[in-house]
Image (tube, rainbow, N blue to C red; front, side, top):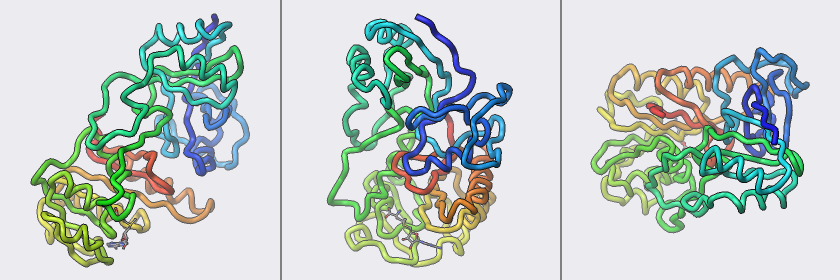
Length: 330
Ligand SMILES: C[S@@+](CC[C@H](N)C(=O)[O-])C[C@H]1O[C@@H](n2cnc3c(N)ncnc32)[C@H](O)[C@@H]1O
């Protein structure tokens, strides 16, 4: 058996947005296996041609358009299934497979690893994430495996599914809020004041009300009736961005799922931060437009990520959008 550390990181692309990841990685992109993109550390040089001529990646900066980042990747040459599973088990208990080659053999290795019982079925919300590390592995061919014992996502292959409520919420947007709060390992407690900007038709407001929070829901469009009548929900028909923090008063949480240009959201968030009236935020940064404007979206997303103590992620339930969260304590 022969093990070699890979000098760099492996990123699992978000399906449909592979070009965004390629753009971000720029000339550090050194290899691709299925959904997995390998970026060598800057000092290694090298690299393969990518879609963009720009080298967008700044050293040490997080990569947004990925579902899971393999933080300590290595390659292992092995001769048998039990040798491969034994090598992984020796490192730690929990491993998730992301197969793309030698599928049967990869599944046989997986079957010899401890099952990921708490992760493999839909979770109810709220759900406290387990603290135990979760690694990732894949086969390059019948005798070569790539793996990482530590990964950025606590979910197998970056994917999480929740036990859905098909009657209460008027949209499935609440799933991305559940995912964000699960990642934060914190959620509004009963009686906490929450602002939900861009609340219509009411998925996030519904989810917050379910937690027992007091919700001020602001949108230019109405909430669906069944959400509007919930106890502890107050609806204000207004442009959320022209309401000053002082108009609304102290909040325990500020949420935004407003469809807007990200710089407009950024200016609004800055006002909230300057007001000192709220310190916990979950906001969707909506991306639109074509490849030509990608640079602008990256630039404003970097400004969000640079806000002290915060984090920008692409959640599994996000579409063409990112999620900015503050505070990020992990
Ligand atoms: C993606 S939807 C929100 C979905 C919602 N989070 C849910 O769970 O049902 C975006 C909302 O932003 C609202 N919106 C767009 N611009 C706005 C603004 N300036 N102020 C308030 N709401 C706005 C739209 O009316 C729309 O209802």
